[in-house]
Image (tube, rainbow, N blue to C red; front, side):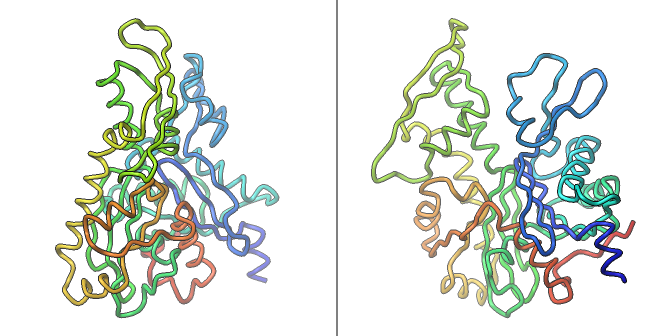
Length: 344
């Protein structure tokens, strides 16, 4: 009877509410939604015009009355009302055949957020229609999603590089022993590229062009064969459209500061890791997850700087939501890794 009731009010879901992308895992179905964390609003009425990919495609191309908004910044909620509207839209989208969806939610948060920011996450889940919300820290979710033995007496090190934050953590016996959360990740890489070409070439490019350039020829370590790409933007001197052929060496130079800050965070965590766990990391290596870990040459750069073996998870973009989903599927076993539930 209870199972039929819970099916009626909505299946349990896990949400990776990311700065750049939101992923939703439905219990028994897997990852069913992967959309940009963007909402397009009507400036005059506040009405939601588009959410997700459709809204992202509007960035930089809208008339004045339409405003595309990314309601999360640096891994936390910057615009509560818009985040609530976006989350409600995604919940309704995955439960579109149910009349009254009030699911139990496991939601991921950066390890470095404040108590106020945690309450904001719980409240936005409540406003979006959840019947209960469990919070899991992103590095723990990523480690579970990567298949690391988080419950054993062995040290596992995870580096999760998302859109807004980079999470570095050493996990043992079901808990985070040491961690560092920095608000430098994929978005800051894009901003560094924009800033570099503005200063060095008087060329203004948009965030989507910067992101595409990062993915296409960006790197953190010298490539075996350096590459080139064409970018288009506005000449700041003449005000006219301009195209430019750029090399991967230039893009690597542009990315040096955010990459160096991420590696410094890894060094910091290693420097305060207890010796026994540090020995485990030497034996087992460091695991990379998150979209930022796909930057070419990053595993090689971190290996060069730390002398540790580096592994990239099989599905870096979805490791966090898969770990949260595993907590749903094996709730009685893995609920100890979740925060205290907030019932609504």
